[in-house]
Length: 339
Image (cartoon, rainbow, N blue to C red):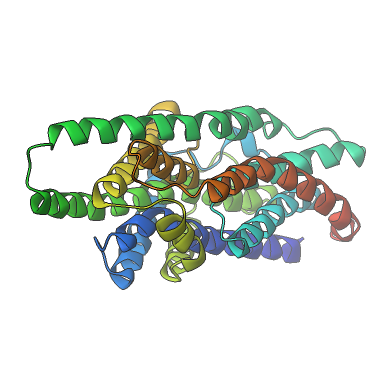
């Protein structure tokens, strides 16, 4: 079982790295596009604050979550490994497509699919995981993009009215400065949300293997590893998705970029500290960009691209459910050897 635990932890680390380069675009794309930050400074800021966010998330949140209670032994590790592998595969596929998507939605959907596969294998469904499907995946999938679109649309109207008599050069400088800060705040929020999920997965693996106590707090080594691996992933820049969000989706200006980042930041921190639900930075940023662009008739929207992005968000759930199920069934004979 020690080998299975090592494999599970390594694959979990791979998911952290993938999440880093896959989602870093959500914090840097608009800042780089509007020249609020240079590309090199932007990825450094994102990596630094993403790492801080992981540590803050572990400090403020419970890493041994009830929704990720696994059965002890190799079988539990096998199910956990299948769900994480499904999220890894989906992250790589969507990055190849240059499409923003939620790592958390992929992870929870993959784990739910793995849980369903346990029933086919003659075991009971896993406690807790299935119950997180609606609050962690379905409801945010339906509510988050609509809320980000509406809030961003309204915020542009408010700022446009308040700034109607201000000098354009002053407004541009102010918005770029606020955008640079907003990029750091979004990276911090992403680290808190995605980092906490990754720390939970690794901690659950250690508990399942009997290495740490189920009632214990976050493992310092795990928190440090997630923070460093996530930061390393951010340093790669994730330029494929950055190009999609910053250059292809809408025509950007500093005001709309700034509004998008701060609406995303507010929603992410509200989801973490007030509602205790995951909020996808990918969905808030992309929907926010569309909301700010829809407020101005001269700001072009790439409608075919926007349709494909929404399609990927919807496809994430069934694809990762199926991947989680197939991987659980495929790995079961190998997991049985670890008994």
